[in-house]
Image (cartoon, rainbow, N blue to C red; front, side, top):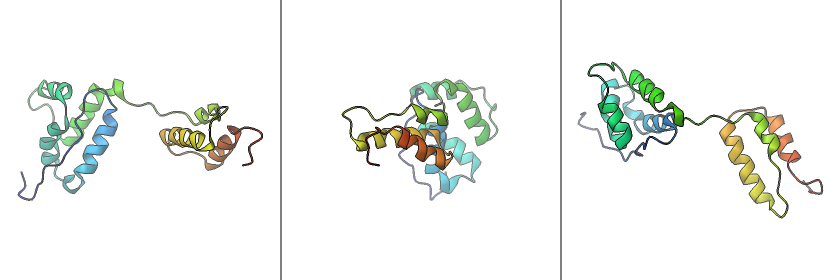
Length: 138
């Protein structure tokens, strides 16, 4: 380990959440050491919970040659837990419920929007308005 390396408090991957999010979080936490492939591989197990650690320990010796290969195999093994991005048209199904506040509707809408990712801003504004009641003053 490098003399200046400080162990970080990683989220422990439980084998039931999105592996891509886990790897992204791990890379972000290790961003100062991202150039050190060996260190990235050596520290990665400390971010794994029991299920993922069993998988890692079951890999054939010397079958992984880089951090990229490690996270690729990790993603393949746990891909059934990957989050599937919502299509942009999922925003069309959003409606402000009767008796619900604009605050609640907006929170639900933007939460879904953030799951979709980048999209056409004109569509975003239009679908937001379409979900409002007709008597809305917005």
